[in-house]
Image (cartoon, rainbow, N blue to C red; front, side, top):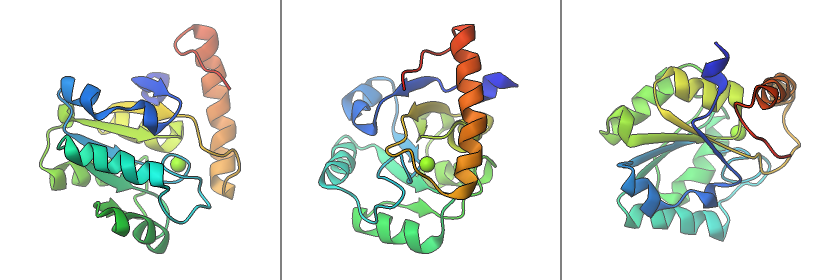
Length: 171
Ligand SMILES: [Mg+2]
């Protein structure tokens, strides 16, 4: 069971995820979380760096879909200027949003990576749905209430896995 919480890869930020490298691995699509993955949860719009990251993906023909458990307004205001498809109220870790995102992109599971900052929603959901998962370090440590509870559980899982040598995690 714990295996399902384990990401296939972990990096510091999305900027460690390079389009050319993804392409080499046969990746043609990204399903990414929004809050604390692309920008801090309380930042409304994409930063210039994030805009550039999306452009680089587009140049390499890598499709990106944002899926977020957050509300419509938040996800829409962020995603529309990027001209990228999005799913709000995604109810991660449930599989449905991941699967419909893949279908919309017309890509197979093994052509897609799932990126996110939370084990209990992004990684667990991505793993359950059968995708390659990449964990990033949350951009800021502050969070909404539900996320705070998730973080406590997450911390326990990460330290357990650290001990088992399954993952090396730096704070
Ligand atoms: Mg997040």
